[in-house]
Length: 296
Image 1 (cartoon, rainbow, N blue to C red):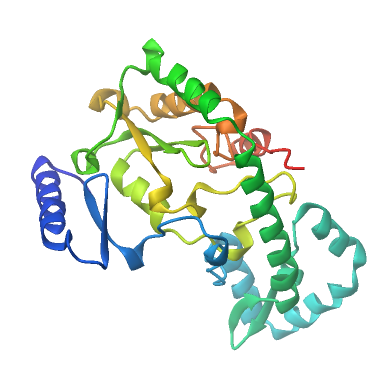
Image 2 (image 1 turned 30 degrees about the vertical axis):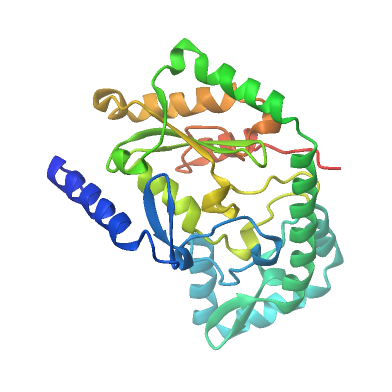
């Protein structure tokens, strides 16, 4: 979708009308002067709701697997022969990198999670969640705010503005900072299309079961997409310069700079900024900048 001045103003008016219409409706909630249907967003990070999406993700890997299994039922039988390969199972236990034949089953022409994988991975996911929650409680709120203020006060960051009304940024491109004060965590992101849509997607997305934990239990950070809308207590958005943000390389460098400005213990981003998985070099950068955390 290409945003025009008219379409942006129309979208802002639509959001304003929603606030007026639903502000007294118990099924809706207001946040940053926008209104949301409670059932369509996550409100808070909750352990009891942390695992909620058991649907196998649809991506390049699972598409290829499904195509192969559809073409030959013998492939699935060959898969199951590997179940007794203890070395691979041990590898999965050590790094949470489960091979496809351990993770998936093929039922009714559909790819589903293996029950044993669900059991084992669920235990690891919940352990990692609680290790992260413990880590957050040990951080100092005063130091957290000092470090964030230091970043915001840098002359280079004068364009970052504290958001009170998210509607005002509909259709804008740029950098955003989400602050989770309760957890003393900061997330840096960007959008070259619509920064508001990007932020709201964090609040709506339910992370796939197999993506809740990537890496070792005692090293993996929680994803920003596992937190709820109301966990985001502050938002800062770059004061938009259209010419600047039409340059992809500049916005990537800007994101990278800000991510590198935040002390690691307060940064929830899992990888470095400005990365796109479009080749071997970018995949290497993704792996090289993957951020681990000592949780025990």
